[in-house]
Amino acid sequence: MRHLLPIVASLACLSLANAMPGDADGEALPRAMTEAEVDWAAKHPAAGFKALTAPPTGPLVATTEYQASQAIFFGYSGTSSWKNIIALMAKHITTTANTEVWVVVTSSSQLTDMTNRFNTNGVNMSKVRTFTAPLNSIWARDYGPRFIHEGGCRVIVDSTYYSSRPSDDAIPSFLAGALKMSYYATDLLHSGGNYHMAETDTGYCTRLVVNDNPSKTETQIKEIFRAYYGLFSQIWTQFPFSVDGTGHVDMWFIPVGPRSVIISDWPLNSGSSQDLTCDATAAEMVSRGWTVTRVPAYLVGGVHYTYTNATIANNVALVPSYTNATVSPSNPTALAAWQAAMPGTTIIQVPCENIISAAGAMHCIMMQVPTSTGGNNPVTYVKNLNTSQSLTPGATVTVNWISDHVRTISAVDVQLSTDGGATFSTIAANEANDGAFTWTVPDLYSTQARIRVLAKDTLGNTGGDMNDADLTIDGVQPRNGDLDGDGLVLGSDIALALLDWGACADTTNCPADLDYDGNVGAGDIALFLLLFGDPV
Image 1: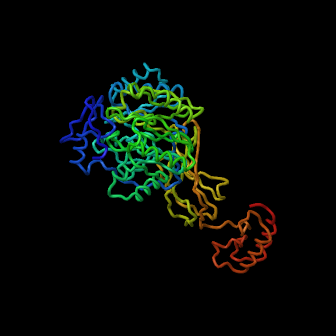
Image 2: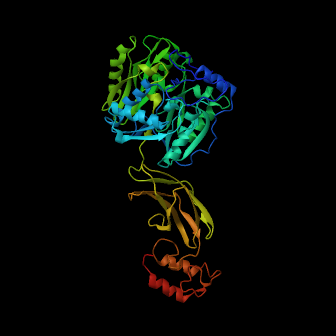
Image 3: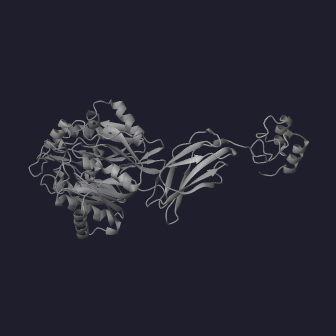
């Protein structure tokens, strides 16, 4: 069964025979499904699958581990020792990395516990933002929001997580609502820890995603990632479930730079399946011109000890350390390898012995929130009207947009340009930022019409986007003498007027009839000469 992790005696087990699992604070749910969860999922095969949404339509840019982050996101759950790891990570993230920490807590009592624990560990509480929602587990990397940029706006892309952990699975849609971000859902059964975004056009995962979606071909799965993430996907061989129970790529592989990656090595398990997978992957990445750094990994007493399951927060990387007698001598080796792989980054080791037996470490319990492309200004992206088309005066057109901001967008202005975006006039001020505006096309003539949505906040910061193509509005044409649209009245315009000499076939659409007498004649030529050479 997929993701099955043999239950370690110290881990609590849910009783799921006849009911959906509850939200139990302090429950030490491992990263992989327990036997009870697998049993429940087998009895409820249709439970928990997300409703598919259409994919993003704008340009997509995926964000990597090593790019700038506004925040690191956590789900505050699990045992006290696990929460201590979150608190220690939060200390380094909010102080040394000077980065925000976002935390979901399940109740006011949890908020109090988190606040006390964070204060005890020296967290900069001014950089902590909390949300309240139900949780099943701590494994935010797997169920948490995957952030992608669509047209410069951060959006959330989601997949179905474990059906036995419905509260976890609801977190991405909950956060999309709380953050006012657009939300997209694939129809994949997929965990975030099994996908690394590396180069601007490539992501990496294991064959777990193929095995978990038997109704889809590998080609179809790759196309889903391309449509929703904007990435080509490389699918590696997964580890046997006997190694860590998850099959996730983040247990042995992490990109740390544009063409730099850290991959596990297995000094005590040479020739094992996991060693062969890591060696083959490392060789392939080297052949592609990547810099590959190897760090030791161990399988001791059924526990997969990894140094790649780390957290990068801007100028800081948090790397696991362990106290196990077999593994701990490699702590300095791993630290030195990370320092060599990420020069200029502060590498801090965080004790992870208390959580690694649950099949995950620091990377598994967090998710990066990328910075906004607008900095302190709002960002919008106009999603439609992005191809050239003609619009009829009086017709209604829905203008659709998405938006993003580090703060709250208070309102938007919808604006019209008739000169290709050089100047704009406001056609609707202080509209709700709800992503849609019904526009009645005005009775004017333009071959260079553009629509812009300008977002603003209460501090006066603004940011906007206009549609990508000139629109033609087939209204009354201006009679200013510029018949060829070059911005000047010249001999070429008089030549065009002479071609229309005589009575106008349509007096409402006769641009050479400057005196509006229904004919193109000498009076009009005289007006052309008066306007000659003037910009219009």
